[in-house]
Length: 104
Image (cartoon, rainbow, N blue to C red):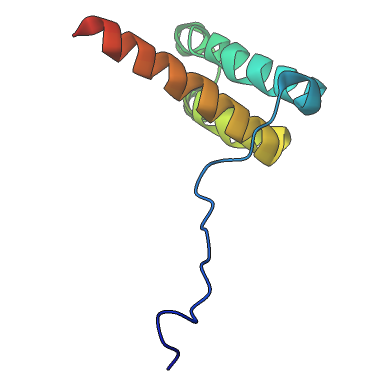
């Protein structure tokens, strides 16, 4: 065992890497549009249920439209990649911290 005088100090970097919107590019914009646009599938469910299609087709389409927002988030996160995830996380948490600070 080394004595405390001879131990090497190691800094641990815990902060997320800094990425700007210019570095992220079109992937971030496309992922955001995909997440927001996926909620347009929910109003289609009543139209599918009111149709004259077979019950099995109605069930399959309404399940697909119901799961679309969740599935699109998974696809968008994979499309955006790590830089966009860190950018989105940093931006969202900084706004939440500011709004929580003003609520006090």
